[in-house]
Amino acid sequence: MNIKTPAEQMRETIEKLFKDAGYTLPELLSYIEMLEKEHELMADQIKKMKLDSVRKASAAAGMNSRLKDALRE
Image (cartoon, rainbow, N blue to C red; front, side):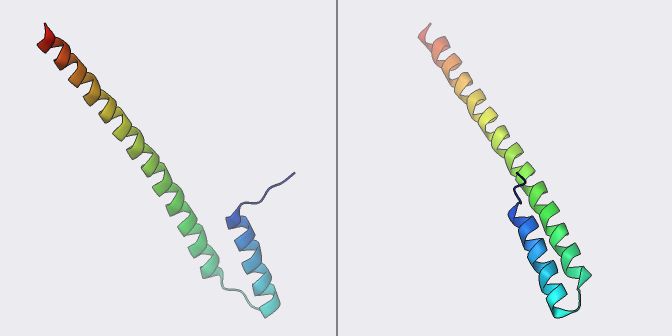
């Protein structure tokens, strides 16, 4: 079973509209592709930033517990 992504569905819809209208606008399709690439890059960057944030938070929590242990002694 081949499940289409929303982007693929939109592209097919636009191509059908072009066919029905009798003309095409290749700039629109290339613009959509550029937006899809930018979206993927931003999603990857957000994942990295979230992971870095979790790592920093866990490192800070580890330092706090070590400091507490040192103060207890």
